[in-house]
Length: 379
Ligand SMILES: *Cc1c(COP(=O)(O)O)cnc(C)c1O
Image (cartoon, rainbow, N blue to C red):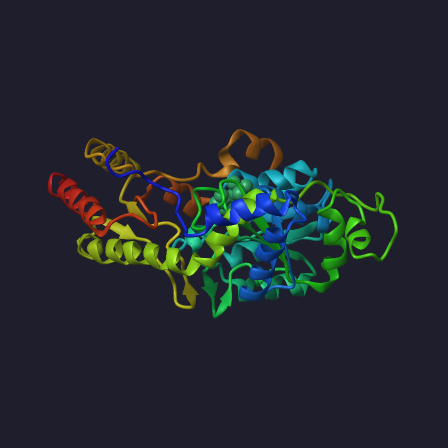
């Protein structure tokens, strides 16, 4: 493949920090790089508390424990998302309730959330698709009115904001991903940010296998023991060392992606005007992070043809989620509220173009040329 879909970003200090972590002789989640990563996010998001986790999936699981969800409870979320968002709900015996998305952004539609709220609703999980912020002001108003938790799935949302406030700083809790396919990476990794003071004390226990080990480390008690439900939600210090270097260079990595994003966006304007495709939309108020550049083709058939045309040219483009409400486990564990028209339609026509920090402008031009060539040969 001449132009792959993704190459993980490289930052300056990864090796140096990992060697330091080894020299520190503290390799568990209590080490100083873990602490520096949490402090970095606490300060820059900002948020009250950050747990650096082994993945976004585990951060979402920890959020479900903190929200105390169980059998009979319902969690409202989009169907157009990664498996983890719904899977963590099913894992604790609650029901994922799938609602439709806004056709402009593929983000959960607040009007659809409102229709799905009932006395069993315990959590709303907005997913910031492509790093474009959901309408968090409206979602928080709804949640506060009905006394429901909001857990943002901000896996794709690092360094993006909505109405001037960072993604991940809006909900009661939010989960980020540092998987190698995301903007900022450490191989496998994630973070849970906690924005509600009521959750902080319990979060210290839940993250550490349900123990009050934090109090022990602080010298507040002379032994620690099992206090509550919990699990092992801490990231290895070696990965945290890698992550700190990435966080420190996150703005640079993001701006490199933005350059490619803008090049695609400008380069495809004429095709959009000619009615051949639709470009992704970043609405007023959202500051995105170029996590994804996607286009919508006019039909599923045309998408398949463009995908193989690009593949022939050595360019790896990819589709995205199979809507979860139609996936086997979605049918088994979830339920649908309202129409899924936008989700089903757009999921069939969406194509993502190669996007990574070190993608050259020349390669992005080549992608654009090939797309233009495809449409020249297509009536
Ligand atoms: C990547 C992703 C996840 C899972 O992240 P991991 O760190 O691999 O667990 C969850 N939700 C969304 C929306 C994602 O894009």
